[in-house]
Image (cartoon, rainbow, N blue to C red; front, side, top):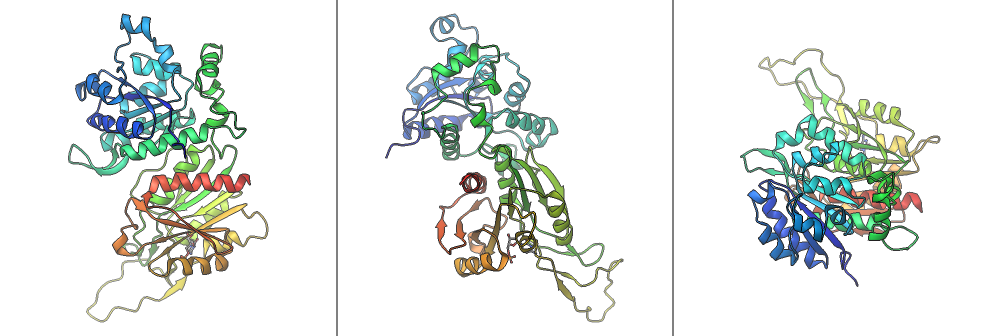
Length: 439
Ligand code: C5P
């Protein structure tokens, strides 16, 4: 079997951040998969890694300066912008993202990124507060809107002893995302890659030059272009009194990753989310709710949709009554907490006689007999597909960043995927659902 990156030419733009050292490992991972890598280092990147190290690992010269006379005669910036199958920016710093989003061309990396019509993947890495800053999130949304693909950043401990999203995605995740991007750019007609020298040269020099004027634009718009997608995510909070509530450990990571992947795939996405501590996915309309009943109302208001994915961990029960003031301890035994059942949002939407989304997907978070329970659930809920996962505490799925999922179909057949980062699970699920909608 040929490897997906076999003979693919990748221009790797290395930005100036502490994560630049990981770009060296990325060169090795891409080459292991058969790719040819041409490194381009920004001035900042050269503070962290040397062009010599990048060139040695790539087996190609590393490019650095905009006004390098020898370079302009040999391989100019326009040629660099065309002479590859894809461009990967890793680490994509806040500054590089800002330059890309505003069309700034003040150095070689920014010029190449502005002059290109190739598919671009960015792997952002920066301080968590810089990542969460509205300016960076705006730039990210702009870049996604321009058809730029994004991998990461991941959560974790940062160099500055802070914790949160901002870490560069792992080199293997970036390599997976390059494969996925090139796979997505491959036209269904089987003509091979459009992102070749000839077509891009034509587009780059024409009057409509620029990413969206590319012959790839239709493909970069994504497999869900023109579709409406609804996603639920996170836990629900069911109030007992003004200060107490019933909840669960859902972080919202998987549902949010699915919503982000759907937006990156070109869909118009509404994400109805319970209370979570993670940022809104860019390019997605987020409706924040607390209770299951509010979630159902928001979901109904967001219809119609082509695809609905119910990833929220909805509380099955809520207190039978919510007290208007804080319940006091008065030395006697506490009053028993009476519970009533919440509406089942998934079953309600899947059972709609009119206006049912064409593809309705449920989740099954189970701690035992995962597949049997998922098979029973698909029939009970009336959905088309169940994504089942084992949430036993030992697996660390609930609240964690990795997930092992099984796709359970209505006919009872099961497809089990390897353990993957939740972002990658999101991307793969979205690709799978897009194929089902197209079928
Ligand atoms: O019944 P259970 O909670 O295991 O079912 C899980 C699936 O049903 C998930 O897709 C979840 O989002 C959905 N669900 C729902 N409303 C509920 C309970 C679960 O939409 N009240």
